Length: 324
Ligand SMILES: Nc1ncnc2c1ncn2[C@@H]1O[C@H](COP(=O)(O)OP(=O)(O)O)[C@@H](O)[C@H]1O
Ligand SMILES: [Mg+2]
Image (cartoon, rainbow, N blue to C red; front, side, top):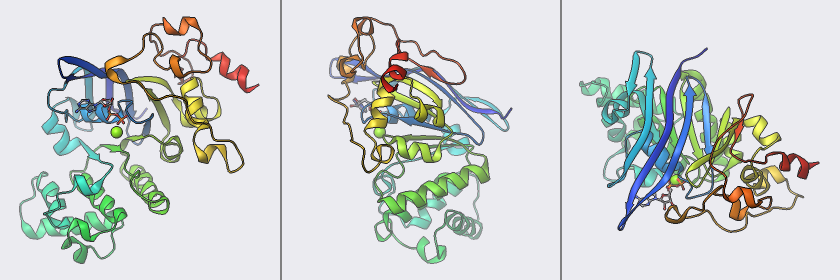
C-alpha cells in the first residue's frame, strides 16, 4: 500500500461574521496517498477554498479550525505546522495567477524566492534551478522568460510559472484551487495534462478543487462532492459518474455540458447554495432536492457506504429508481 501523505479528520473552519461565528467548513474528512489525486467539487460557496487554506495553515484573519490535519512525508509524520508544511512538504496553486503572483517581481525572481526556501544561496545555482523548473513545466526559452514581468506572459504561461514556484520546494502534496478556471478551454487542457504528468512523474499526492465535475474527472482518481460545508458523496470518479449516490451529485452531473452531451437537455440546479449564516437543518441540500421527503429535513449528517464509496443521502436508492 502506498503511504497516506495527507489525512484530514473532521475539519471545521469557523470565521467571525459581524457579531456571529459561522462555520463554512463543517466536519470534512479525506485522505490522499502518494501518487493519488483527489478532486473536491461543488458549487461556488461550498467551502472548498477554505478547506484547502486550512489544510495549508493559511486561514483568513479571525479564522479558527477544529479537527486534525496531519501530513506523513517520506521522512516522517508532521502535525500541521504552517511554516514547515508550506516551505517543504506541501504547496498550493491558486486560481488566478495574476493576483497570486507579485506583479512587481520578474517571474524568474518569483521562482527564485521559492528556490531560496530550500536553502540554496549561491546565485548561479539558484538561476540554474529556476531555469530547470521553468523548463520542467513546459515554459519555452526559460532564460528569456525569467526576465519578463507576470503581465507580459499569457494566462497559461503565468499558471505554469505558479506551478514551477510551487514545485521549487519539491512538495509531496500539491493543493490546486481551480487552477484552470480562469483559462480558455485549449490552455486548460494543456495545464491539466501538465498536472497529470507531474503527479505521475513525482508521485505527488494531489488535491484538486474545482466547481467543474468534468475537469475533476479528467485529473482525479477519487472525488469528494462538497455542499454547504460538508462532503455529501465520495468515491472513485468512475463510480460516481456512472452511478451517483447523492441527488446533489446527480444534479451537478445533469448541469455539466460535457456529460449531458450536445443533444441532451442541460438542467440547472434550482435555487442557490445556502449561506453559512443560515444553513438549513437536516440535509442541507433538501430545500433544493427534487427527491426530498419530510425525514430529510430532520436527518443527521453521516457519510456512509461500502466499496470505497459513501453518501450522506438517507435515500440513495431513489436515484437508481429514478434512472430506471
Ligand atoms: N474571509 C471570509 N470571511 C467571511 N466569509 C467567508 C470568507 N471566506 C469565505 N467565506 C464564506 O465561506 C463560504 C465558503 O467559501 P469558499 O471556501 O471560498 O467556497 P468555495 O471555494 O467552495 O467557492 C462562502 O459562503 C463564503 O462566503
Ligand atoms: Mg473557491
